[in-house]
Amino acid sequence: MVERYELVPGYTMSRLLKGGWHLAGGHGEVDRQQAIDDMAAFVEAGITSFDCADHYTGVEELIGDFSAAYPELGKRIEIHTKFVPDYDRLTSCDRAYVESIIDRSLQRLRVGRLDLVQFHWWNYAVPGYVEAMQVLDELRRAGKIRLLGLTNFNTATTREIVNAGVPVAATQVQYSVLDSRPERGLAEFCRQHKIGLLCYGTLAGGFLSEAWLGVPEPQEPLENRSLTKYKLIIEDFGGWALFQELLATLQEIGRAHEAGIGQVATRYVLDRPGVAGAIVGATSTKHLAGNLRINAMRLSDAERARLDAVLAKRSGPPGDCYDIERDKTGRHGRIMRYNQNDGRH
Image (cartoon, rainbow, N blue to C red):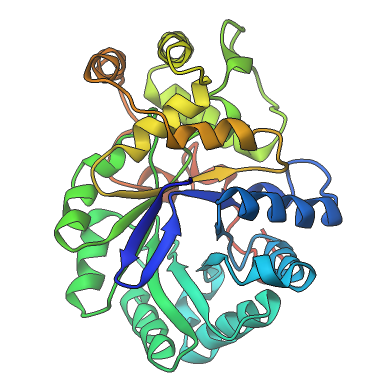
């Protein structure tokens, strides 16, 4: 049985979520029919929550096509999408624009109501994110959205939105053995306000796996967008040598559970306070059986202590959630794609 989490009364989700970013391009060719058939395998295995976004090219349509091809399985899924207004539209993010994106997601996904819409805002210096969230809340009350969430907001801005009276059920943040930024205030705030943490980056784009243990540090250019992104996180974490020590420790712990590095790393995050679920990016069912073992795994206090001893040596990433990624001139910001809803990057 895949663990489930009650995000709000009456709404449960699988604690392992099938991520959609890897199907959006930049990670190799996507066989549409195979991707749809793979979704069926995930749902049959109990992973019923899917994560996608308005700007993940083609992914909302894929999920809509899945529900049409497998109608009975389609009734069992929870779809978590996102509203990510383009960077260049922040100054004109009015009600008409917000509703047009929501309506487009409804059409693509072939549903009458979106289960969860997670809102992102590129630049805090541009006002309007509270007002945009209030428009989303109006659409929720109108029946187009069931639950509202955030993604990549730090503690201060999350507090601002909650204080404005918007009901926030979840917030999606990068959280892994490499990235502890949610622990610098956001996790505790969310615990106090019953906001579930939905965590991405738990596998660091594939870096948290046996494939990277005992190999030399890779150099640019890397194979795909995920590896490019998470290599920067490894550098902030403390560098390749410390990362290798972490991988070795995860592998040793995994042996006692007949589990791999990524499965131990995911279990560690699922066990953190306030975590509702972990998003596992998957382009196929290759690792499905292994990921299902996460549910039965229970780390001992001694195993956690061994991991924590390694993690105590880390030097970053610095700041609150997504703060370094918001700097368009910095290492992290320069690789972002900022205007994907209108096709520009």
